[in-house]
Length: 161
Image (cartoon, rainbow, N blue to C red):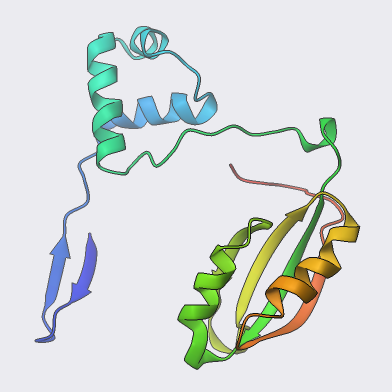
């Protein structure tokens, strides 16, 4: 359940779409390989191809499945520079700050953190030489942003996809 308070202080409940074991099995197969055909999935879970297609389309419509994507082996491509940047935002401008951060392609993740932690972003760049221009020409120019710390990712030990 997703709970929201209405203006009267009472709880309102928005129902989550129903997901059963068949849906979960379909999701599990697609998470492992999004290119798996509906026929292969149907054979694996003992249902018809039409059933699988209908259920996938429903989960897309209900935004349970938001997109199909790929996972690259970065070591086989050029070795991009990955870094995290801790930002201390002016809290009066937090909405406009996050809207501007969303426009920057090099930023892959944005997290608003609790307490005095501010905003934490993860960036991926073609090389180290691209970091200073990103910080100086884009992120630092956003009104209300103060950059507190930049850390380079030296090794990815675990990444969840």
